[in-house]
Amino acid sequence: MDPINIVVWLIVGAIAGWLASIVMGTNRSQGLLADIVVGIIGGFLGGWLLDVLGVGGAVTGLNIGSILTAFIGAVVLLALLRLIRGTARV
Image 1 (cartoon, one colour):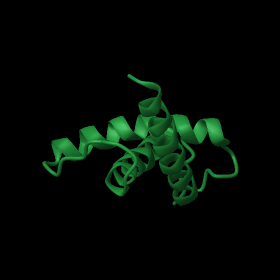
Image 2 (image 1 turned 90 degrees about the horizontal axis):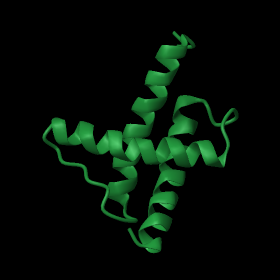
Image 3 (image 1 turned 90 degrees about the vertical axis):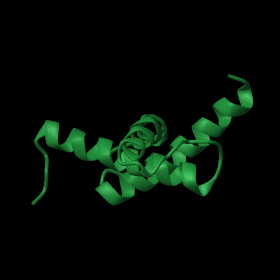
Image 4 (image 1 turned 180 degrees about the vertical axis):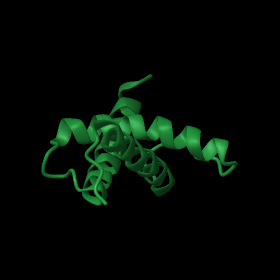
């Protein structure tokens, strides 16, 4: 993987993780590094979930589709973490 791809993954991860943290209400408790990690893991999770659903959802670069895929995965990841920790809000 060349350095440009790594930078693109970091940017997509940061944007998707930040947006997901706003939606899930964890924005104040996690910083930039956590946003990036959540977004990158969300990219893998979102790609897998959308592929299973038959929609297709590859993270293919710095574009809206990739950010949306990573965002969906990041929201699912944060929801699962909230469920596991037992901090779900009703």
